[in-house]
Image (cartoon, rainbow, N blue to C red):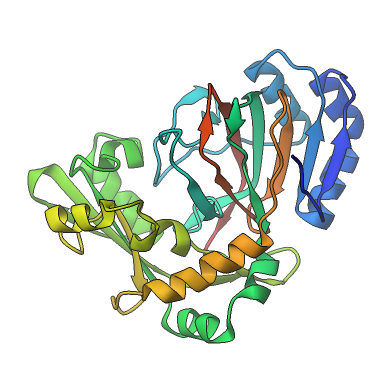
Length: 310
């Protein structure tokens, strides 16, 4: 089932992906500029090489994935698997790396193998989300800011070597110092980082205010079932792999996050992946997530157009 409004959808009708993208590059770019997203459906492709060639046509300069928050595999230069969480898990809406000091301006998703059931990549216009969040919630997070606390190396979540793609503590120290990231080395070769960041951003091209943060994904209330209680019992309130608080370190109430989650649910759009679909999105205009699924799902992603918080 496809339920997409407000984005550009281009039917390739079986044409070769690279050739079609080359012919339609201006229309694809125009769709992303106007609506923030373009879906190319029905193309023919052989695999990751065709995806990369299409990216080259669209002017993608693939970025490294640093300050990682989820497990991925790099299958080719600048091309990664989408987040490798178990198929039963739902990944909440988020804008890629909005917790970090820098993030990609554009993302491209390529469906190499669609799931048997489920497995959609729902997307949400975060300008519409901002319109749907209660004003008192916006006032609270805008006034108080956000504080992202991340712990690496506890055996749950990512190890710091995977997150920062280095075995060197000195390189991590340099990265943190350059990117405004507080860090503390803990016992047992563990690392804790803290970043203070605003909850809203201004789009660098359109000038529109956006809901741009990892509140829904990183907040404790997004942990499934009894996992929240189990993890806090073992690691403590400040020892979770990912957490987000108000800027002063005060916990953010669950009901505030629930109001934001509800706004995303009301504005969210979905479509069923077809083999060789290509979705290009403005990462500051559209968030994305993942449905649970069955079968062998393989969706690849590439990131381009670095934007820094400064």
